[in-house]
Length: 134
Image (cartoon, rainbow, N blue to C red; front, top):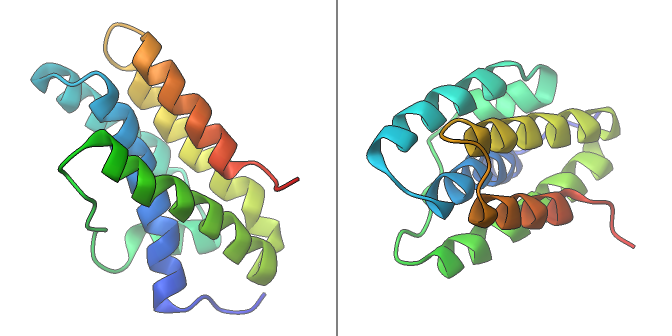
């Protein structure tokens, strides 16, 4: 495995935290946000190896906050780049990254009154961004 650069680690973190943020914002609400944060942190804490290193080191990613479209435009490409980075430098961690991101996103979606239609749509976009390229 080739070590990841600080920028590459930041890309992995941006994708993972951004995916959680996207799902959380799909159906906003203060009580929901608290439950969702707890759900996401549990899933992200289950990471190991390079994925854990990416999620627990360095600064938190700065995500756009103006609109859902801007957030999506930053996060979905970051997820794709994260998978490409891992495929090139640490192929054994690709599936672990996908699993952690999807677990966190799924837990966030289900944390408050189950998965709603807007959350389901965002989850599908996240899955697509994490999928193997054709």
